[in-house]
Amino acid sequence: MKSIKYIGIILLFAVFVLACKDDTKEGTLILHFKPFYDGLPLQTFTVHPFDSPQQLQFTHMSMYISDLRLYDQSSEKNLDDIELVNISFDNAQAAEAGYTMTLTNVPAANYSGIRFGIGVPPDLNQMKPADFPSSSPLSKTGYYWQAWLSYIFMKTEGNLDSLGNGTFDTGFALHSGSDALFRSLDGPIPLVIEDGKETILNIAIDYKKLLAGVDIKSNPQNHTPQDTAEIVKIVNNLSTAITLFQ
Image (cartoon, rainbow, N blue to C red):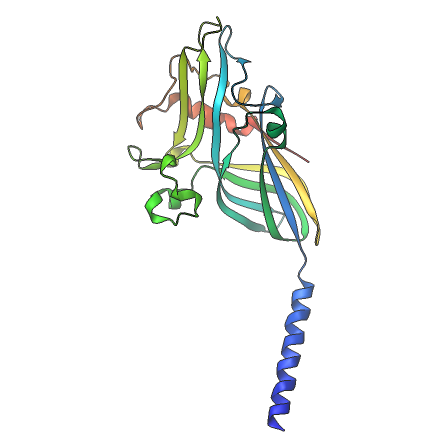
């Protein structure tokens, strides 16, 4: 008789667990990171006007997105610690689609907005690629700068036609890094996550706005930790260069 009672208790417990699981309401949030230049989808090796008569073309754009959270009036929901987002696309269709980040098991609720960092948070930036498994986005040695003792938070690379004569005579590589250049952005936008459904959010990065006021001709690269004047302009432009829409 004892064994029958024990089986009954186990069955009741299993039913309770399943009932609790069924009560959990979760949805999926899909983020599309899209590069633009002056409002149009940005593809690599396409010529764009810059600081007249200069022209430029981009060859690579990427950044770390970290500490991604949804929030409402009373709480926050952590969604993802860090991901490397590469938005270098060589055709307009891919640029329009953007880089897709899919976040599953998001608690169903009405949210007021989204927060995320551009770069590697200070606690993780104290570490090195060797400290992480190969599956981690922080294991990439090409995104660590030993001279700075920092990860490279964001890469913006391309070629500049400094005279406006059709000859791209200057290659540029503008890289941000170090704790002082980590930026956390707050995007207030109503987001409804429904049980079993997908919600899409587009995150547009306009590189014309991102490079506003930056003197690429005089400072095409930053090589030392003290050489940050133009990079500071870029990271300070992030809040106006990034917009959210559904």
